[in-house]
Image 1 (cartoon, protein in one colour):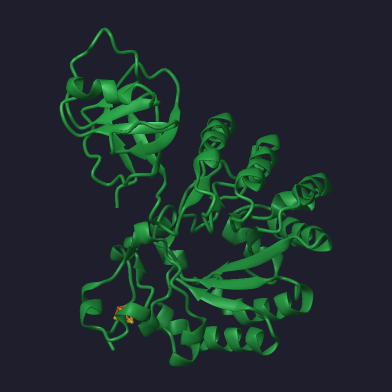
Image 2 (cartoon, helix red, strand yellow):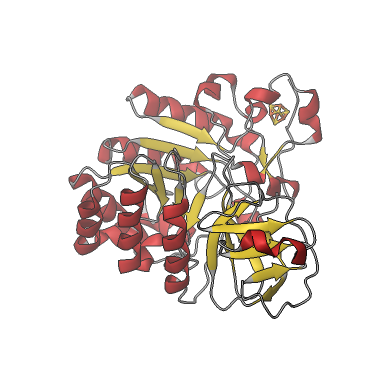
Length: 379
Ligand code: SF4
């Protein structure tokens, strides 16, 4: 699925965020896609923010409208999608009207450097850029959007911008669930927890990874000294104010050996968490480079996974399995399996076409073509 395309910019001196309009009737905040000859249709675009087209545009001195022309493809854009036009002619899709898997990207910066990070951090201050983009995006998102993820990088590194965006989300999308992926370390600092609490949005849930019951392993996985203690302290700070918390555990060769110990640690020390997600590995970002350290076939950890899920379930914890197809799970664990992979990176392998469970199975990440289980088998 295409989420990014590029053309030649004209009159584009600042970023523009707007809704795709193919109908020709221009509305406020719309970015018109012109299908036909640009010059013949210019009068229909008078109220719009900008025009984008696959056609070649020959400069018209009477038109000051921002334009991106000669775009490679615009076929992936639907009426009502929200896009970002960059001054270099790159067009990013920010919100897809017909998808339940939309998220806002807050920053590429991170204070951890996890071995299996699918979105490796960049050491560049992008706070203002992403704040501008998301501030323009939020008011345009339909009010009936049921869920909108927040991701990065580490979103809390945006500082004041982070809280401002959370404020805007509460104001414009008061009924939207907001799962926010964070490593949780920032919440070890009381002032950061206090400001998050002051947003007072019951739809916000912080999704925090924890990779072991002992600091040595967690800190190694996230490649950051003291991360375990900061994350645990952050979780306690948040819990004190009833901020909703989900714990996320990525399953790989380093986390599997102590998975049951981690489950015991969670039940005994963090029984207040709302949800625990046990997640299959995505072969993206850093993971291919660390594949020897990380890869274990999910088929081989079935028993440990079963013991862990049963342990937590027996004690009344709310638990799900993400990103592992049904043929790699014991049948007893199927009720815990969720179709968790975002539609734009979800695929099925050839074997799946003859599988009776195809409709119930969450399939694979697109990146599984680089490495996947030897035990995929149709039912
Ligand atoms: S064969 Fe494919 S569809 Fe069937 S359970 Fe395995 S991964 Fe899922």
